[in-house]
Image 1 (cartoon, rainbow, N blue to C red):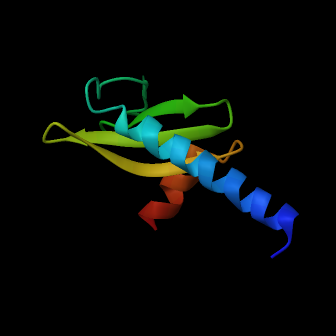
Image 2: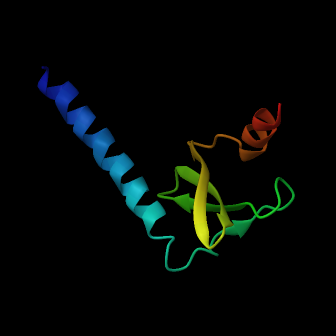
Length: 84
């Protein structure tokens, strides 16, 4: 395996692990982020490291991650796509 490729894979895995840990940190204070009821009742969003938007709801006191959007992907577009 190419060393550069292995380094890129390791970087990607570390990044996704940081996103996963950030999502797990919602447990003690789930009602954080910005409410986006205009898109979906109960929808909340929170940013991560200025590049990712995490969209979630709270159901039965549990956080449900709906989408993880990278690099400015539109939550408006993502919510419309899901409805079709």
